[in-house]
Length: 128
Image 1 (spheres, rainbow, N blue to C red):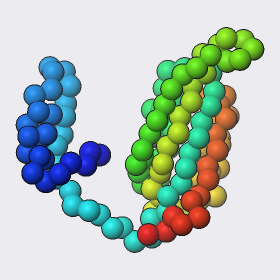
Image 2 (image 1 turned 90 degrees about the vertical axis):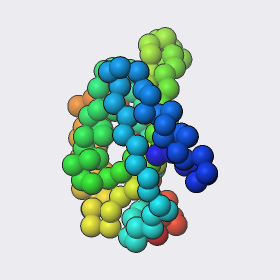
Image 3 (image 1 turned 180 degrees about the vertical axis):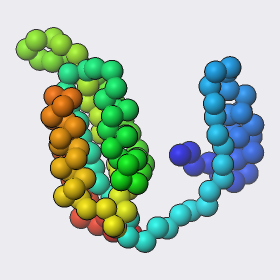
Image 4 (image 1 turned 120 degrees about the vertical axis):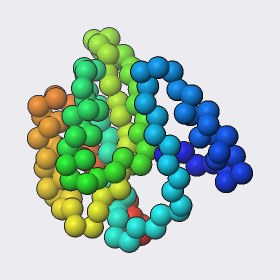
């Protein structure tokens, strides 16, 4: 999601539509959304870098109608071994009808399969 002043939105949309071949860009306008009952959850993940970590995590989140509002990833060298570590931090919007216990359990099961450490924290003022 990108926020831009209304007077610059058309120019941004035009630029985005000129994406290189092979890249699909969908541009749609949305107003400020206020969705009652959504909770904000912070996800942090750390483990050995491997293909598909974000794909697998996002699939679990999508299956439970959880939206990724912000995502930051990076890689770094492990202190002792020098192996490449993958780190992700995300802000998630979770519908009120989604059980946080079930979500955490499902994500922890996946984290075990991926052999990564994963933590979820609910923001204290997360219900909007």
